[in-house]
Image (tube, rainbow, N blue to C red; front, side, top):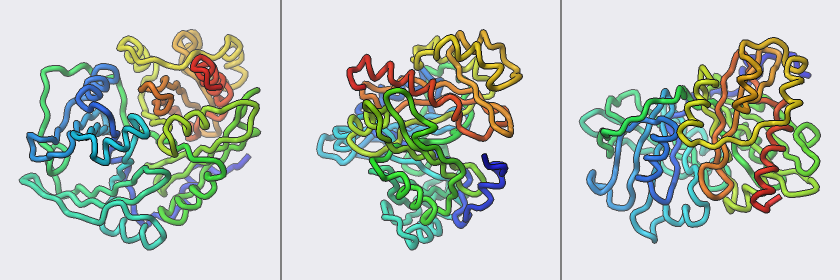
Length: 376
């Protein structure tokens, strides 16, 4: 096992962008108005901004929600022949844009495209009475896009083209703070190619690797590598399927999403017990709890922790430890009817890893859901 800390590992990244974190995540959905209501009601996101016909946008409608530093943009096409509608027809509701907050959007585009990135949007400056926002974009895996957003000269609610969105319906927040990482699923034998792309094009570094000997169950397996930028604010684990007796969750995702894409969004909290209780009370469904033995063996596996094991067991929360501390995590069921995108709730208490010790328990829970769907 490597004795390097995660800080030492990420220091090897080439920080030529640089990236300050996630600016927003945009989902293309079939009905953005209703999706916005769901994320407000179930997850406690707050209304921020809106763009659509009333603001001069004739082809789509977008609703911006925020909680902590997490911004979600939910976008739907207004006509069936629009490219957004085609994306939803093929993939279902899912993540289109992983937007990164950068110091210089023009430089980010130049630096990444000269290193081989496929352009999505040439650099542009947009403005309104609140100032200017500079943007550009490149493709990553599948049809997923990294937008580079420079907003240091902007004071409006989101960006030009949007107006402030106020609502009489404002459920309380659920304690979600920021996006910890976003995981991508790629096809067979595509992980190393994608990892190389993040290294060469984005200047990221591979900070963790897991193979099918580490992530497997009786039926299925996967391989995963975690990519990070130089300050650790942007982390993108990349998964690919591995050979197993039956179909893995990664294969199921690729089949139903009809291509590569974002598997899950991990969001951080400072109190996972209270956050999960709140989300459950609002109808968010989580994967089934691991077997009784998981919690009986917890002390031997992870040592002393601050939380009561009985409370973690009651909620199905998983715990893992690395050289720098421990973490607590739990995963929702897919948030749409296709078994594709889901969310992870994570609380870090020193640990900088991704819960490798929980992978077996997680995959067994996923397989139970797959079996109920008839897809195992």
